[in-house]
Image 1 (cartoon, rainbow, N blue to C red):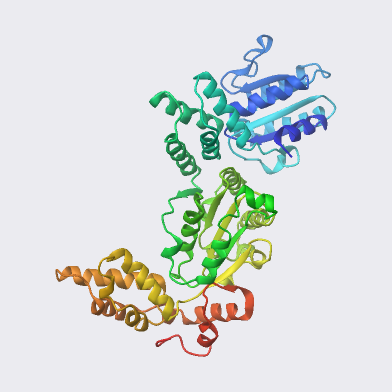
Image 2 (image 1 turned 90 degrees about the vertical axis):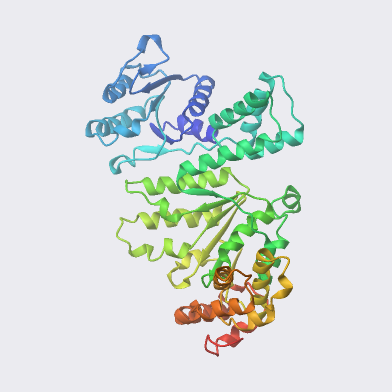
Length: 506
């Protein structure tokens, strides 16, 4: 249900006190005023500095006194329809007199055509008011809202845009507040007198700034390509088939938006690289979620941050949301002594995974399947669960080829890829990269280019994770071999590995 319809429904149903967490104060107030005019309700707006404003007879009432602001509501005629907007009132909810007064007003307003709206940039509700307040989400501007604003600015500046460029501008602005959209477009107009295609970069920079300020999501540059991934042929084929799944043509065909992937496997095998390559290949923005930043110290803060990140990700859709090492974030969530905060955050997150209809493609990675809650493995959270294991000899050859093609593109023929792959059994992609870096140090220190022997010497000094964490890796391989996940690699060496130690050549 859209915000306007939900808000008007609650007005008619006489929900006494509404709580709307949003940073778009001006746009929300404009929307409520429009609803008030259409439903013949007077609008009263209060803030701590100026008191009530907008009505000459009540100017400055309740100034610097939140309790008087609530008492003012009782003084108005009972039959007079009205909406009272209280800015930043969340700061006073912990006061016993304010809390008690709100509960008294809640009883009174049920029999009157009046509604109280608490407007706040964050969600912070004391326990004793949870049954009194009704929370409404005020979404970021829709593409229609953005298009209307861009066209208004174009009309004001007597400028025009090609339909294709207008659509690109609107798409680029998704996820920004209306105020930020106005600012960045005003900056573009001030720079060269009109809005141009190059201004999309200004909009993207504003978007990066907005995401940085959330301190939860990170706008991650994705330059890696699918070809930068060595091996993992099954996974790459799966991704390539869905390259156009976010298009309007796919919607008309009846294909739903792809939901996401859970990549489970050994550290350093390319799970994070895959997340970056997906965003680059599909030409979608990559957002990285640090789950640890969802948790705050104040009551209700963690839940508020979770809702905020979901709202931002959906506003930026279509996009790729990368959740790295999700197993560490929610390990043992049901036994943590935090009053159930982690459990509530996890519940909100997995419910969104299952029910989201927005084109947010979630790529979650996990190293330890044992610590991952069973609920997240249930079908419907992700389109597919892939197991990313240690590369076999053929895949190690491909990984050496990818790195050496980047490091020494003109001398690639000087390196014996078959020998390098054979001599590095049980090495992960990250360990192969580290061996090459160490070999470069060896060659550089002797004022020459590095060679095959340098790489093998460097590799001999690395103890692969397959040997230091063999039990954990063996468990993962047993889990994958039991059919719990699809194999990301197109090879049959997994079952063979289960019967042989994790040492020695393939």
